[in-house]
Image (cartoon, rainbow, N blue to C red; front, top):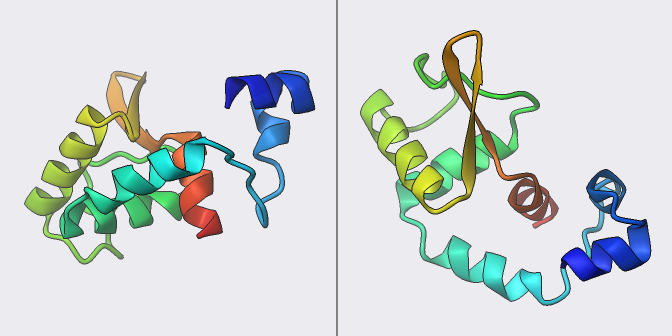
Length: 110
């Protein structure tokens, strides 16, 4: 995938991900699909919810439009982070979470 981005988009991931209607994944698509198939229902719900968010998420507040309880949501986020699908950043002493950009684009294009 990195070679594709380098060859076709001069190394720009943002250009590669810019067309929200189409995402060329090449050999990466079966890998992403296999990750998705292995997720629990709770993980999938959290994943799809994160894919709708435009900014990083403070998970200390319950996602109002999530079907999961706070505990289920936290467990799902923790599991997704361990799998490398959710990433964490520290902002102002708080942990904020977001979906891996390539996986997010894949979910949005499905």
